[in-house]
Image (cartoon, rainbow, N blue to C red; front, side, top):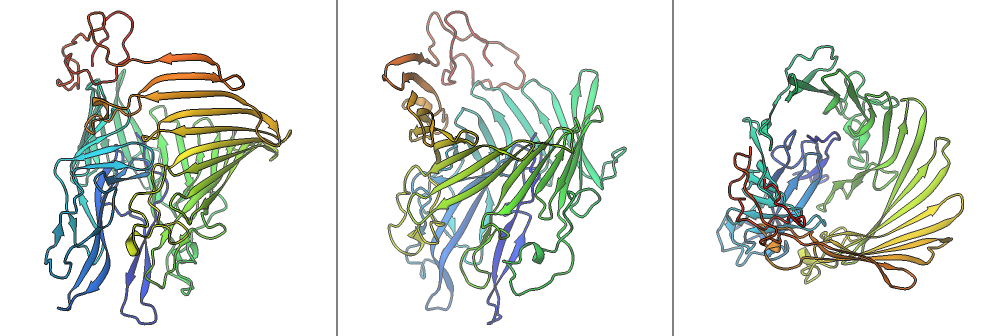
Length: 547
């Protein structure tokens, strides 16, 4: 199980009747989704909004454009947007918008939606969804269908919750939920049941306000894991050096003209995880509710420092007093390890830069590694690049203008790591690794350069890989798009091939066949010996176990 341990921020900007302050922002820490994954494997919701709200001759307000997309939220809180493959998430120009008199319309988005963050997820809806007239806000709605990952794993989504997870061999994990959409029972692929009971439990020896209990089968009987929660202002929840703050104190850029606000910011946070042997993780936070210190069962500790992406600001982007977009963007600035919980063992610091103003913006992250004495050991620069411009971007003005705001309006289009440059601080030597990709963000080329004085040295090796790019593996309902076929390693100086690997999948014949194994727990019977789109690499001889 994975859960999110850092507060999630959103900003909602409302329009008021006050002519001097026509717009005002509100901090939303609950997230835009109707509920969070919690201990479950994720949620998937649809989101729709409209743009260019204009008055018609009859005095009614209507939308000139509509936009509908889907978002998968993983249990750690990370979000993946999925855009329809028919239009790639293009805003839809509503025809005859003043006379249509419709609350929703077919924008031609179809049933297949794909991620554009490089993960190659594909979601196939049970039924197509229309765009809606959400002139007075954003519409969030539940969806049902199948979410396919690039490794062949499938999530069945029912009303935005994951009902089961199935691998490419048909083995399943099933989930049940309560009326609050919290997972309460999990049946794994080996037939074992795990249950989750929620806040209100009495947790022995715990000073925390409440805890959840995860019960799983052990060798000698049921075993419990306690997950404690408390308010951010609770005892021991804030890391040393931090104190409770009001929202205005945390985000002065959001409310520049409001000097104070009663009450400290106090969201609920996970404060500890206790295992059956009574060992535990302790979790502490900064004033923003971001994870700031993890005390390990061994006595060691890891600390994190956070800053606004607009450092040294608070992370608030935009203008509170106009109709433009706003957001909060905060990032990790440092990570420190303490082997005994007190004395520094090692540290890393991070910085970020973004080059917008184009259809294909770039981003750079820089990592500095230090030893226990604070001396810099090496610098690692990761350079990221979009796969290319989005086809409909800058195809017109208004909602189709993607480069406005220093590139902030450019939709993501499979960003990929283009190069990594490593510099050794003591010698000044520099090495580099450069990458190439295919349309599914599979790594097709890796160029590794030796260390050189002040600049990368000679090419050491070139690793080239191609992938299965046709046939049933690419069906959206299968989505096995990460199957390497051939890998060649070439010497950097001569270009001669020094290694070669060939991979064959599902090569079922007289010498390589699947044999059935009846009675497998949690196995989908459709994945029988006749199903051979499972990306199985078969041994030279013998029959592999199916399931």
